[in-house]
Image (cartoon, rainbow, N blue to C red; front, side):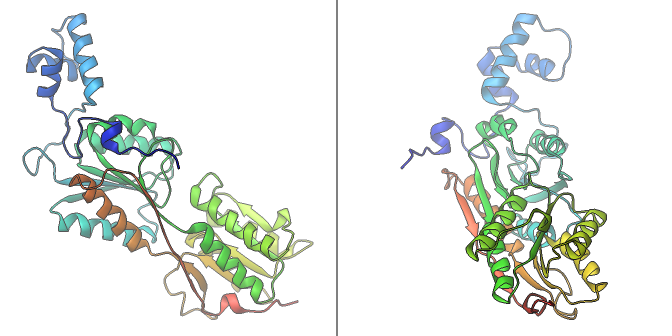
Amino acid sequence: MPETHSRADRFPGTRYGNRPTMKDVAARAGVGLKTVSRVVNGEPGVTPETERRVQEAIDALGFRRNDSARVLRKGRTASIGLVLEDLADPFYGPLSRAVEEVARAHGALLINGSSAEDPEREQELVLALCARRVDGLVVIPAGDDHRYLEPELKAGVATVFVDRPAGKVDADVVLSDNYGGARDGVAHLIAHGHRRIGFIGDMPRIHTAAERLRGYRAAMEDAGIAVEDSWMSLGVTDPGRVRRAAEEMLTGPSPVTAIFAGNNRVTVTVIRVLAEQPRRIAFVGFDDIELADLLQPGVTVVAQDAATLGRTAAERLFRQLDGTLLTPERIELPTRLITRGSGELPPAD
């Protein structure tokens, strides 16, 4: 088995929540506090050699200027940051609420923001939260390279990634079983007689989209079904793109008899398209949606527990802050197939 190291081994002398101060920088550089303040704030009156020593101390300690106008308790902000993909996405509502409830139970304030699925915006938001000296971060990553966080991890910022893994850094991550859930959902359609099953998903660079596509392919392969390229479509989840993909699958030379949707936004658009079809098309979506049980037929879904994802991530974060959890882990939570009718329809031809 590969050798594992705790974060304390990788970053000796650091502990979560114990952030370096300007006083620490001054002591390491052998200068006065005012000198450090001048360097940090870009003020004149410091010689190049002294500025170099101060900057080296800043880099060595992982110091970040405290931009927060209000400190809630001495030495710590009593706050954590939550970086989501899209605050308007219904999936993130219960996740955010769960993180907030855990934070509140620990006497901490939650500050959240949206990356809009933009890696650069994610980095800007994360570093802005760090500059305001949050004690920890829960991040749903938009990018696949999080080495920009290494100075913050070294400085003691507790960090947990959720829904998708971090890229190129060793950190806690809490995920749903995207591969297994998609595999189960597609296998359910196959069990009801379908051989031509379409898959419409999100951008392929996104971990969840790639894993769900992998689950779709695995279920089809298990059943000995050769997948045609025209049955798969990945891309942005705006209604126009999803509508075109669904209509092409339903009207092409080898039309599908069932569709598996890769997330809740795709599901909503596909349901609208299917309502316009002259024949009944079987359907399973990944993620539950509001009123899914009231439609006719009800919408069969692979449900993930967003609240449990958020709660698990937040609880691990506070265990890091308490100093009781040092070795990063990958936690994968199960999904659940909820049958309501749409996934049980037999092929129409």
